[in-house]
Image (cartoon, rainbow, N blue to C red):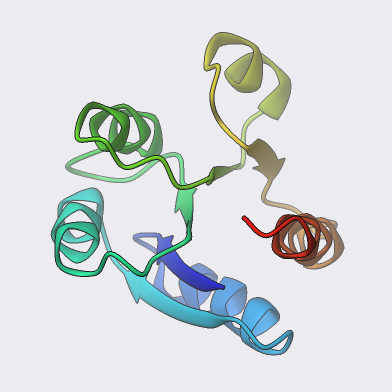
Length: 120
């Protein structure tokens, strides 16, 4: 899969990319939602977006909404340090909301591999 990772924390972005590149996925990391919008406009081959929730300029939720308004329908995974359940409940259409904790190293690759097996 061609995956766009959006996170204002370079260490977190690199960690997510490393986890998924180890599984054979191609990852591109950008620092914010504005860069993500530009990248998606320029690269129609992106098949999955993984974004942090809390970022300057455009939050992960605002990025999700903007992408949908622009017709980008790739699966969108939101990563957060907050409780994911209320975010998922009030934001239909998200592929998943995952907690940024020690379990992410297992839960994110498993989710992405499941999407890849389904041909997403």
